[in-house]
Length: 187
Image (cartoon, rainbow, N blue to C red; front, top):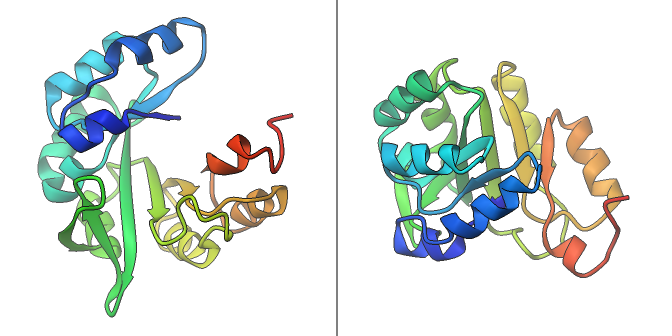
């Protein structure tokens, strides 16, 4: 899982060449960051990326994203929804966390129906904090949407956190800072 943070801030992919180099190394790569158009998706897929992560565009215009799911296939697109706790549940945020998307997570997932297969959910209050993932949120999403392959993100700090995400129903987990700080290794 590789995020083009420059692209996320610019609202258009910026590190496509580097991502293509990584993909050419034989790694099954999931990547996004700034993906807002059909052309952005096609460019990443053509560069060897196995699955493209679409966040802000999918949150703001689910119908457009549903068209991409139909065109490219549900295995090739991952909806990435960054959320923050609100009085109504979990509000989806967009544009590199700079603004609310005007929709609550359960409402957004309902708009996709069963067309969306892969979803990455990041509780932004935990991202990079190494305080443990929001397993309650992940469990709630997986119970309500058994057709989804949910990737949990934000707060992973130990192998026990990975076990807790699996027990919550997560199909995968995003681990960043814990690896950089050598809290544990991939092995």
